Every structure is written in structure tokens, then in C-alpha cells.
Image 1 (cartoon, rainbow, N blue to C red):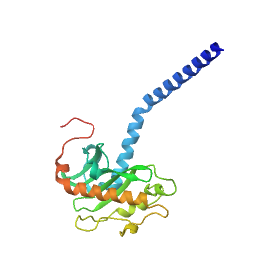
Image 2: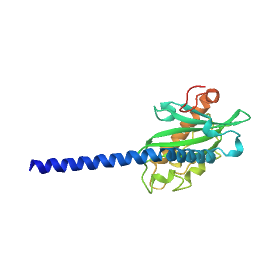
Image 3: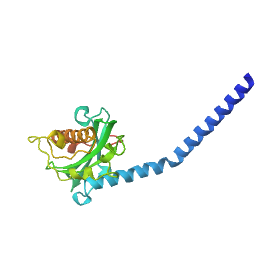
Image 4: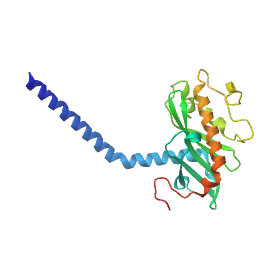
Length: 211
């Protein structure tokens, strides 16, 4: 009896070892393609929220790391991308996190110009409920497009969903998600407003050594 158990155990161990090796090999062979696809996706998102007509630099290559748990929703460093014209900054795309989504963190990115006009907003990652909270995803709904062109002023009332007295539509059957999303946008705009000059003067490319 013990021989059978031992033999089956060895077979399972060998099977697990083969599977692990196969997964590792596939990951190794596709790592460069995955990185390239991620870069293409990032470029696409950045072009959506800061149009190419607004800048003359490659946004991907003008990246800095930012961190502010209170206003950006996480202790982890996030990326921000500076848009320039003739080496003068004209706008910034900055990642932020809504930590109070219905199913946890929602990672998004906003584009804002020097006049505090929102150029665009896109969702990067989320785990919101399919059919309800996932309308923050442009593939599911055009809801995020409604933020483009909104003006932010710290002296005015913050952006808010209609249920909280604002002008932003919430979803039918889901309030927590859009409320958390709009709050994250407000906080990110406050962060940019407070730190714009520092951000524009920071030379610390993401994932690279200081220049």
C-alpha cells in the first residue's frame, strides 16, 4: 500500500515539475513580447488622454515616479508622464488609485493641462462587479469620456456624482464605484495642483537611475 502511495506521489511531483518548467519556459519566451504589448497599450492610453497634437515629446520616455498615499490612494509609487512643447511642460498624465472601490482598488490615470482642465480619464485596473461597476471601463461604457473638458478649481465644490449633489452621473444600481472613482480624480487633481512645479522639475525616469 505504501509503495502505491509513494509511486503516485512521485508521479504527481513529476507532473507538477513538468508543468512548472513549461510555464517558466513560456514566460521566458514571451517576456519581451509582453513588455512590448504593455508599452503599446500604455502609449495608446496616453494618446487618448493627452492628444498628440498637444505635445512634441514621447510621453512614455518622460516619466517620473510619484507617491502620496493620502491623495493618490496608495503607498506604492505610481507613474506620471509629462507632456512638453519645445521642452516646456504643458500637461501631465498621472496614475492614481481609488482604494475604496466596491471590490477594492481601482487604478486609473488622468490627463490634466496647466489650466486644470481634465483632458481625459481612463481606467487601468479594476475588479468591479461585471454589469454594474465595470462601466468605468471604456470597453463597457463611455462613462469615463464625460470627464474630458471638465475644469477643476480648488475654490469651487469638488467633482461629485449627482447623488452627492454634483453633476457626474452615477451608474444605475451602483453608487460606490463611481463615487470612489470621482473622489480619486478630485484627489489626483489636488495633488497635481499642489505639486505641479515640483513634478515638472523632477528628473527621475521611471525604472531608471537618476539622470
